[in-house]
Length: 438
Image: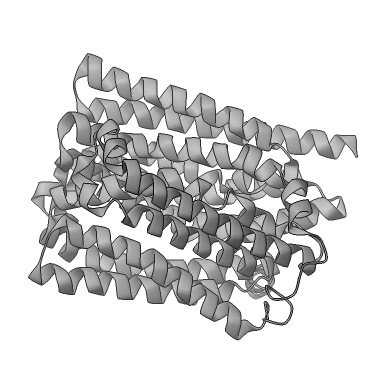
């Protein structure tokens, strides 16, 4: 019996010493601490601001999320792929230049037609903050560039520390300022500053790490001309950018449509619901995705069985996520009412359905991370067109035929769940077929 126990302990220790597991643990621990901070502040913040203020924040963040995929044309995602650092550094510079150019273009668009655009989207409520949209976009782009470089260099501890510090500072600011002026405008401004703070801290960490020094990174020309790099990785702006753009639209539609049909409070319910249920994805799913991306890329270079890696990671995430998501499905209204206050009980009704969709989104992280490596970005773009069409239909049926926000959210969530299952299946099939062709 003692020997069996010792063998089990040794196996657990050996498992925890694996580089992949260790890296996931580092990222997840930092994200966990950040999410614990957010959850600790949330009951106070939701009582300070209320559903309407969160509805305004939700509308702003939805518009930013829709435009963010075009901020650097998805070139930052390619930073992990090259075998040579010189090529990756060229992609860093290319990403910065592209994001700066697009920032200037969006500023011009917002100055000349921002109010008309918001009217078209039935989002006039955020008209006073329209110029914060391009600022949030460029901050998000700089943040993504830094994150992808750190992923490439496997500097996961920096990402973890920054996530914790940013969460504490941002939530502290929401609480302190909210006592004086508890309005949605405060949440919108702080959301923008939060992106900028996150990006700045990441780049401070990169500079201190010495992985991207001034002598070898941006001041010296890349061994490959930027024009050639842009052409070499054309599939990212051609396929990945529209895919991410369409996905962002489909993710943001509920907030915009709920606000339009049922008012800002309904948008606020959905916003807090997505924020809370997105925490497990940020905690473990994002960590696995960040670590899995370079791992699956290396495995592909070495001719390993990529389909086996994807399946193991997917099943592991399913085992981790089943219980917390199941609890939300069963006790959603009671949990939200208890934690956030009685006025948030309807968010719990939304959460029951959204948990089904978010669970499948939680376990599909390895599949999404493997898409670039498997060279199926064209399929992913088609998938997003199918996804947005299906989700718009689901929302329209709920709004126009049932005239019920909970039914609309339920149909939207069920369609999302089935689409994620389809994506996982196709990715596994592609990985197996590539293995068979070798």
